[in-house]
Amino acid sequence: MSYSQERVQRAADHWGLVIGEPLTGGSRSAVFAARDAGGSDVVLKLPPARGGGRGAASAEAAVLMSWAGTGAAITLLDATDDALLLERARPGAGWPWRSQESAVGTMVDVAGELVSRLWSAPMPAHRLPTLVEVYPEHERVAREDAAMEQGERAEPGRGFLGLLRLPDARSAADHLCRTTREPRLLHGDFITKNVVSSAGSPVGWVVLDPLPVIGDPGAEVAAFAAYQPAELILPVAESLARLTGIDVGRSLRWTAVWTVHQAAQAWREDQEEVEALIASATVRDLLTCNGLAR
Image (tube, rainbow, N blue to C red; front, top):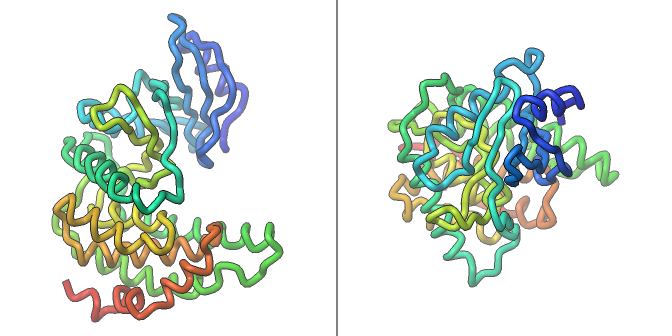
């Protein structure tokens, strides 16, 4: 996390905050519980500093303002170039990573409602990156995560199959990006860990921590699906694509891409099952040029 006590104090002084405990769950930003001058629970978020911190929060602030009327995203209260002041979602419970099979339909319904609301919002004036621009960063993170897991677990071969398939995933992603017909404003990290319960939302849930990007909505569906337990990945992708009315084939192809990334990152408890999935004929076909005819 990229923050300093000076950054925290500067934000606290700017908004008159009493800073509480750090909040867990994210890896890029520093996030703190806080109380404002009126005694209300709020959240202070310090995104990773870049260029001395100037403009680090501007992209996230722009998309949260765009999503303000959707009821699907956490409420932005205020922002500076360096920090975000957010409403605290209550009760704020997360969706369990390994959902019971009986709850999968509900999970897909919630995810579909959330992304449909997010995608309906207007594009912000702020210049946002495209998916093709940020894809190399996703691959870099996958490789770094693999190295970290290999070291921490003393398993030098962990994630090897995923790493081996990254060039295939890159080729498929490049084709999908080049053939995107209706790019949309995407959350960019739409996975269950970034969805929390909120009594103030008409959906009952809101999204947190966007990494906003412009691109193929199938990539958003796929990211959500690829984060699920291995046996649910392809069924969830297909169900969510159908529910949101987007191209099922492209969504499944993006799902193959992100599942390769999941296998390469090597953090999962079902690592063997994910590796078996990316070694399957189904995923191989989804990643091939023949499978990318559309």
